[in-house]
Amino acid sequence: MLSFLKPNPVKKLKKQYEAKQQQAFQAQRNGDIRGYSLLTEEAEKIDQQIKALENNA
Image 1 (spheres, one colour):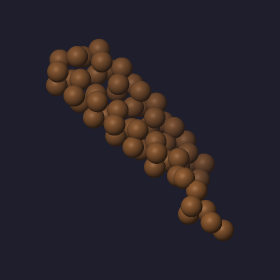
Image 2: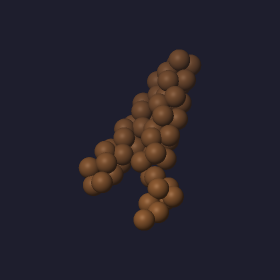
Image 3: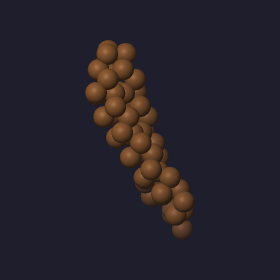
Image 4: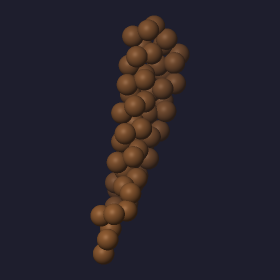
């Protein structure tokens, strides 16, 4: 009934994904290729979680 009041986990994960992508972009611009790859990997894991939640919904 009041499902609109419940926090949306997909929305939270999308914010985390965007933040990781931004951090990866900054690392790449600063020449930190290892940091870029690690941050990109973390962002991809978050993206997989998002897709899994969206498929279950």
